Length: 188
Image 1 (cartoon, rainbow, N blue to C red):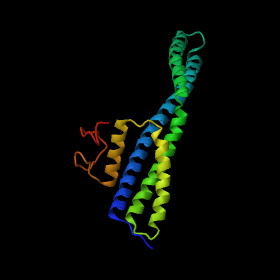
Image 2: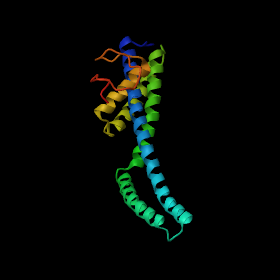
Image 3: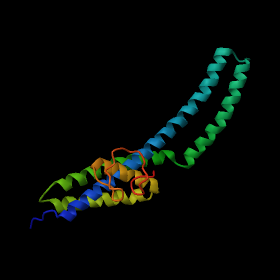
Image 4: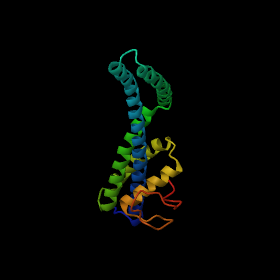
């Protein structure tokens, strides 16, 4: 027996597409944040010794400028050491990797849910079951990443904007990612 898609199933697919897109957006922003932190950490670990070496080469080993630059580099080095310890203990590299993986998976899931919502396929039920299993697996992993309420509102706003849907509270289709006073799609 060939089953066709009901309006309720189609609406559920669109809801899943929107949720997956919003989650992808959240992890895309997290990945950018961690990528920036990791670059800053790498840059500071290179630039401090290079600066001291450049000052020594330019002004000589006995110059007062070298002594000042060593003191400044030493103070900044202590800060950089603390930042490095924090990055290691907070596992920034793991968070960056996870965020990149989740972004990719959730954007793919969103696209597949949206594509399936547009189709009237004879294999709809099978495709839906596969997609829902993939989505449940990704959701279970993402839920362990402590997504904050402001991040959820930001993700929802991104998804509503992407799919041109109205917010249930303010009844507006977002046209930018600027935060608003809406308690559902703003305040992030």
